Image 1 (tube, rainbow over the protein chains, first blue to last red):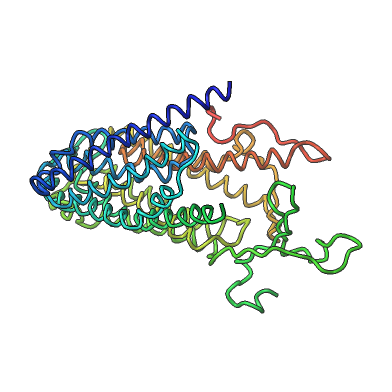
Image 2: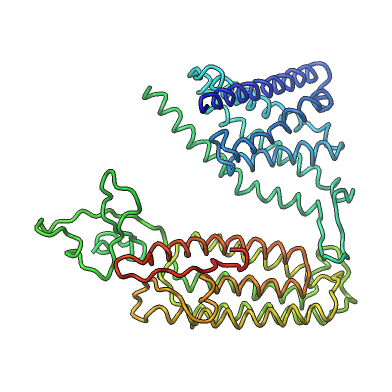
Length: 221
Length: 281
């Protein structure tokens, strides 16, 4: 019985990882095509659908962690997925004025490269039971460049969206009301920017630690 | 002794334990500063003993930690009440009316945190003298942020008060719980002797007869009283988070006491009691 479930689990995770992998391949190809043919301002429109689909699918990963299907700690996946969803839906989708900025190109390329490597890494593990050492090396080394470029793009896009957020009153809930509650999307966005300050070094040093562990295992093998 | 060798590792920062035997699970035995080294040596063996040293990091006194945690809310809240800060948030607060409930809320809040500071210095007996320095930043962030968050809403120029009956009941209930809470703290203090033995005893008397962590119970209900009176989402969020944290602590304490007082070897058996929040658990 137990091995039946673990086989089903493997098949499910293999399908999940390769499916999302395909989504991100699409994003990268469409982005490069748009850059070649039209330039940075056209990138968002070209990648919008596969980007939203692939990024939102990542919510499943939080559930996988919560129900114990995968070992990744929710504390590491939640902030990463949270910030991605915030930028994808809360900034790019909600404030079209940001879509033509050049940071969209750097964002999309950083995200898609990272995710293509990550999902194929897990996809191979589930489907074949192992990963080739060059893929392991890629997974634990490309972040060294792609984390800074990705984070800079995310922070930059949130920052340039701020004046549009303030002017639009979108997602805001005002006082007076019976429950003395308010929500100001502009302040919330500032708070998110604030979280990047301790959050980014935390994520980066976490990955550095993971890298050390993974590559030393490789050497020993 | 270790202090002589390395000035950095003052005694409260050291943790000396016996090395864990391979195959034996559970926490390592911590050497007590009151015992002698010879107490830990096995009989008949030599006078040498291997101990494991762990650096606990820079330490502060618990009383220092509590003082700074509570000072924030005590100072920040009145700032929102007295100073015209809301114009920096884009509200015109030149002609604001202050509702009576807002004034009483400010007195209640300041009373609460003054009480906590006084208890820190005059009532509490701490089982450990110190706490890691990093806890100062973490705890202050929690208390100060929530304090400002709640103060912002209760003192807001667009604040909507509840009925007079409701806030009177809320504050009265809250005050009753605060007094009970103080009494609980005094009972807990008397469980520990001044020589600092700090061992565990079965708490009894007053609400402790029915609830293990009656001090947390009264604290939670005290905040409930404040929220019934002031009715803000911010206040209720704080209540939920604080309750979750205290429930976590209470379950640990209850478990420890039940384990210690298991009725065996002449030890009394820990009585059946609510853990923290009757009638929930």
